[in-house]
Length: 60
Image 1 (tube, rainbow, N blue to C red):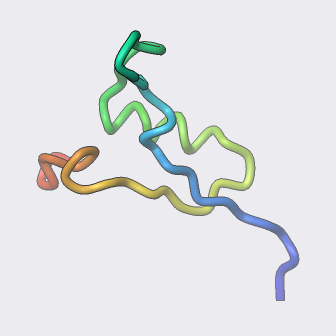
Image 2 (tube, one colour; image 1 turned 120 degrees about the vertical axis):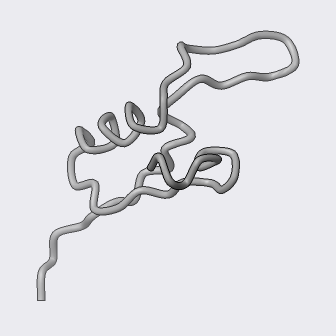
């Protein structure tokens, strides 16, 4: 049994964020967010929200 801790990364947090006053950070495509998640140490999975993140499931 492995004792290594792995994390799931919510890809929505790896892109642009908005509130009612301003926009934070640049927009990224779903593919870019997955590539960014792959760079996180110990990332074993991703969490994507449908339909917000995965509107075009066939493209992903």
